Length: 295
Length: 162
Ligand SMILES: Cc1cc2nc3c(=O)[nH]c(=O)nc-3n(C[C@H](O)[C@H](O)[C@H](O)COP(=O)(O)OP(=O)(O)OC[C@H]3O[C@@H](n4cnc5c(N)ncnc54)[C@H](O)[C@@H]3O)c2cc1C
Ligand code: FES
Ligand code: FES
Image (cartoon, rainbow over all chains, first blue to last red; front, side, top):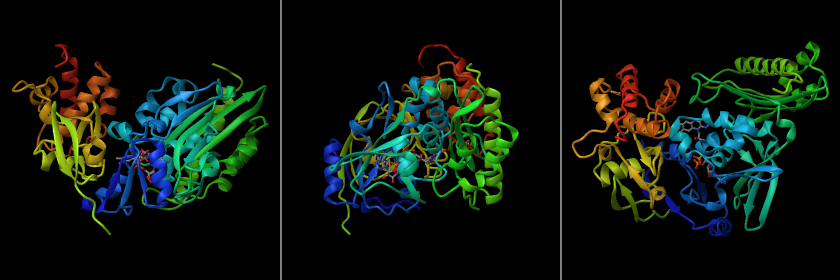
């Protein structure tokens, strides 16, 4: 069964100001449509409830990947293909390209956007763990102005988030932290096939050791909670410590406090918990091995 | 609830300017097959998983079942009908014929479009790149070996762009 197209209105604003006016005039009425790789699947299944779509796919203001001295800005409309090809990202924030490369096949990567991935808010989405590990922020814009919030605070529950009906996600902002250079960047997706499968569990982690102590450690996980999960309890056991066996054991035990996996069609709670712990342990063991070495 | 109205959209298909009047959320797949009678593009899953509906938009591989008409306004679309040069098959198509890369043929147009994007991006692809390039295209008949052989063979021919 497919959706019935006569039921759906689509407007294509010429620029960001026009788009924001439309959203402000009738808040909650217009659903932004970017690459359509989530929304059109719903439409094709006859399950798209929003009947008014705002086609933002061409808005120049939401495009492009650029960098200043202090941060990298990824436009909400940046596609997986653009992200995986970007040289600065490959060099400084390599887990984003890894996540992009493992998201769907080429035809999905050519259309799917990072903004759509964030706002679609699937707990299984692949770019959020990397965004969490890199301490990303999201910039939201409306006629009222623009505001920037920590991505780790953006999702409030299953498919709920800090985004007002008159706002668009403008861009993702990631600090260019010099400590990332020489850090260990570890991205793992455990699915049924290597790419293209919706993850059963994914981990993105970044860590750094200086003079025997961990000076940077951030981990994000997918498919282990109602929202993409930042692993603050694990991080708390690690930062400022030396990676002894005991510290690693305590950090792995802290995984229980950071995630709340469920049973669903793709996997079970017990499996996800065990895989999460294994992924965290393997990251920490690799970080210990990586040590102060700046290859 | 009020129904949407049909609107006119203009875009280029296989080199020819076309104008289609239909609902803006109509799937490009249906517009191609029904409005433009280009039935070479197939529907498999209707949800982005199988690649049977693959076409190129502005040179990039997409699943036409996931593209609404409103988003092709002003774009350039290439379908399987635009791949051969008159009677002369593209080297990818020839390779599919010579290596028995098609059985029932439902996946074949999509496979050929995916191979075109692959060759445009990686003129001499590695096996891993071929695998990645075709990973979004499912085939229920061939077991993929013959398709791979066809694409590998097409890659090895070096007679210019065709
Ligand atoms: C076959 C297939 C495989 C897939 N594989 C993966 C995978 O491996 N990993 C993965 O994470 N995802 C996967 N996806 C899901 C999807 O491709 C991604 O979530 C994609 O990033 C969505 O982006 P989009 O631009 O296509 O979103 P759309 O469908 O256009 O929009 C998605 C949601 O985001 C909202 N939105 C989009 N942009 C904005 C904005 N700028 N401001 C406010 N709201 C906005 C829309 O209103 C909508 O609610 C897959 C999908 C398919 C069909
Ligand atoms: S019909 Fe479009 S991907 Fe299957
Ligand atoms: S030849 Fe029948 S699906 Fe591929």
